[in-house]
Length: 217
Image: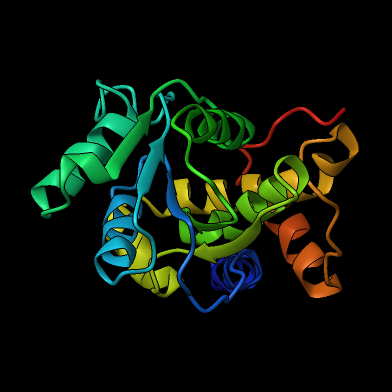
């Protein structure tokens, strides 16, 4: 049972995790693989709006996507892009990354290998992972400008689209935890956490939304 307090706390995390950047033209649009095909759709929309001349999709599979995306997240995203009219020549696929750090490192290496000069990245993720993805790029690839993007929707609409509220809440809590512990491990830059956001996170942990937490160091 998900309570009204749980929803209010999830809303706190949902809003904080989004960077609220305005999309602008960049060297490349980078779609981070996940269970959410909406990431591919947003990436394609930005490309078709002229925000970047090239798409990179990155991602292997995870426990969440192994069954629904057996050919790998990036490959399924590429197939979706082609269905939506993107030419094959405008899409690069990085099929090996299994976490956000690898998404960034491996995509950077792929672009360098292809001789693509990158000064700015339009970074597309799930709505509740914008901030973590942004902080990862700032740590790993600090010389590029980063503009974050995701599907513009409310938490309620996102839950409706996924049809699994507990999974979404668990993912929100997991994303928030990583903002707390990953800077200490050198995975992303430190960011200040507002008090109300920290309190909401603690309450959701106490309410049992913990399946996506990683062991703290």
